[in-house]
Image (cartoon, rainbow, N blue to C red):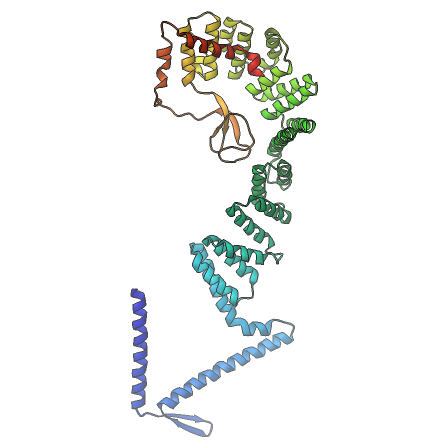
Length: 485
């Protein structure tokens, strides 16, 4: 407001000053003598001012004619745009000034000013690629989706700007939630520039979200070929995609192709636990139990896991508990000190009704790493050795408040999953699930369930209904065959 008032007052002051100066000049009665060769002119004050103006205009015109003459000479020497540049010089200057202001406004985050200045530059400059791109980006920043799409579509006709136009339209479709068209645009953009890593990542994410596993494998191969993905990472992720493709084929009833895809997934990444489990199941279904056992052993050597133990148990379904324990020894000897090995050995011994051996196999795991599984196994051991029901309930009550142990946890958002999957349910990230302890909050719970072991474990007389529940839990824990299946 103050600045506007200041400009108005300044304009009025200039006008008053000019009027006053003109009046003084007219009242002075002074003359100006001008002599050109043999001619002499006597000019009054106003005539002198007019003559000065005519002289300056003539001088400007002469300079322009000289410049035009040079432009014509350059045109005659082969410069085809010399004359056009001469007449468009001022227009281009104003256009470049507007372009500069548009760039500055865009850098400042002022989308409205950027659009206005970019539109002005578009009218003054014969640079449609430059100005359309600037208008599109400014409109995109301001949220004017219609204008942005219009200018991006105008850029499609030029080979130099076609890729960036497709990128802009891709972002627009993603903002609108039209993932089908966005996926098609990303595929088109990748055809233009196969090595463009952001487009590769965007297309791969959209393909995994749409469960287009075949297309995702092609994109993944392109990432490896272009050098944006290490070979070992590519093999693991390609195995994951092959495994997902196997699940999809199995759901469609194409069991043979599903088994082949599962075996291929294990071949690509033998250490991938879900792939090893799926490949073992496929080989067992084909009557190749020995090959299935080799697959499980190789994966177990990399990392012991209960899913691998369950798949290994399922290879021989009709064996006795003692036979199963003997067959499992080859697995157990690979990582004798691992927590999973101790838990598995204890479960096998419980199944064989060797409860003292199960206690020795478990060791102090229920104290050093008291998980739900370890404490439940201790309850089964106590039940098998004939301990009081109060003692058994005490172990089960402790299991209620113990940590779950290793689980499938997303390394990106720390979301816990009940089973392995390729895409995180929470954040949508691909290949981020890892088998480790989930982050756990510390401190007492609101319901004070930490007191359950003190209360339940010291009951003098068991309640019949509780005994039935406890006995059911123990039987379920001790039954290794059902758990493995």
